[in-house]
Amino acid sequence: MVSWITSPGLTPYDFACQEMEARADAIARGEAEEAIWLVEHPPLYTAGSAANPADLLHPDRFPVFSTRRGGQYTYHGPGQRVVYVMLNVGQRGRDVRKFVHDLEAWLIAALDQFNVVGETRDGRVGIWVRRDDKPRSVTGDMAEDKIAAIGIKMRKWVSFHGLSINVEPELEHFSGIVPCGIAEHGVTSLIDLGLPVEMGDVDTALKKTFPLIFRGVDDPLES
Image 1 (cartoon, rainbow, N blue to C red):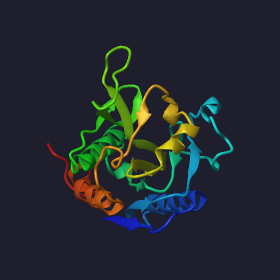
Image 2 (image 1 turned 60 degrees about the vertical axis):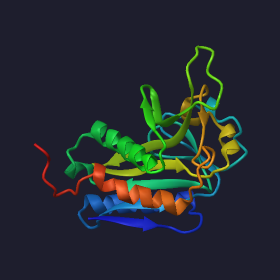
Image 3 (image 1 turned 90 degrees about the horizontal axis):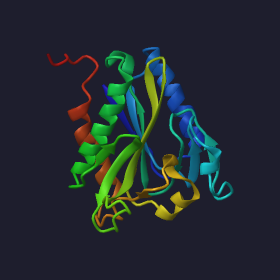
Image 4 (image 1 turned 90 degrees about the vertical axis):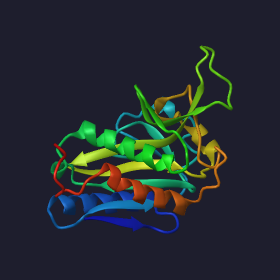
């Protein structure tokens, strides 16, 4: 059983970190159910374990939090759905690479509910969309923007941190960092793509597509 928790309003980032780490520890001890926690944060930047200080372009713009997740710098703020994923990967095959692939597949399936084609790229973390409405690169490649990010941490085979999907954030706020260390591509959102999507619609899509990707811990594996 996976509990779904939705917090209204803006959740302070340090509080969220404390809560999800406590929940992950309880899951590892067998004292709590797995959980998916849906939040929004006030405007802030986070630095993952691989963050390059040079990628923080405006350090005084918003609060900056060092975090235990993997990855580099990212932005969180109103209009962005942050999805904290606390799952027992130890009971789901102990395959971290497959787990990350499943998170990507989940995001792609959720975006497909809005007829948005999300794709992964070798060497670029997150989910990307092609932009035929933007100029091609100097090499003739179609422009691509990032619409969703992934950054997880594993402790005692339980995951925490997770995903973010840009629904209607202020995209200009991403200019204070080099998002995930990638300067040559942009950032987009569902609203920026011209879709009249609200946060609740995204939550519904996430809940609908989750069981298509993730089995229950007691479900038999396919042969």
